[in-house]
Amino acid sequence: MADIRPPSAKLLAEIGQLQRQTAVALQLDLTDDPKRIVEKIRDYVTLVRDNRKTLDEDQVAGLAVTLGEQYVRQFGWDWNEANFKDDYLDEHYVASILNPDKSLAIVPTWWIYDILEMEKSNGILLNFNMVEANRVPVGPPNEALIIH
Image (cartoon, rainbow, N blue to C red; front, side, top):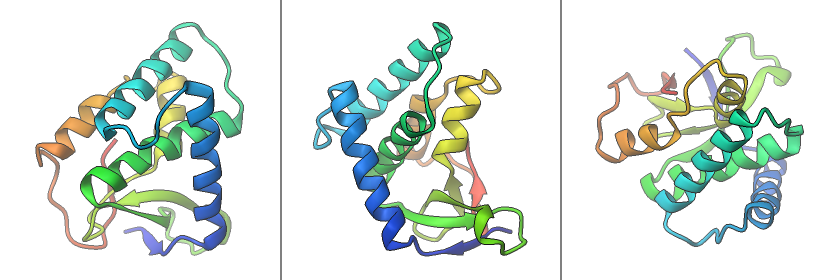
């Protein structure tokens, strides 16, 4: 079981800054329909992966937080910091979005990296649609089961 804590003010500020940078780079309107933004992120990640482009950490983080924010906007999920190693070390807490009862989690940075490194298929839109249709695993509250 993951240890979950509220996001720090520093993390929330960083999320906002990275989103704004990503919106400029990808010409996104952050007030657009969340699904349209998710589609654009999916398409961009596919393009980067297929063309074997390299993104720097800030670019990946920007894509990740912009993606995560669409779950916050559309489904009422929240940003948290989660440690999935159960060791309580600060360096192992990662920015995560969790559903309201914290039974499900997405770690968008890990997810984007996994897609770009071809360790996972690009199921970004599929995942969003599954959450929208409530076709996700059921887990105990505060368990933070990763669903990507």
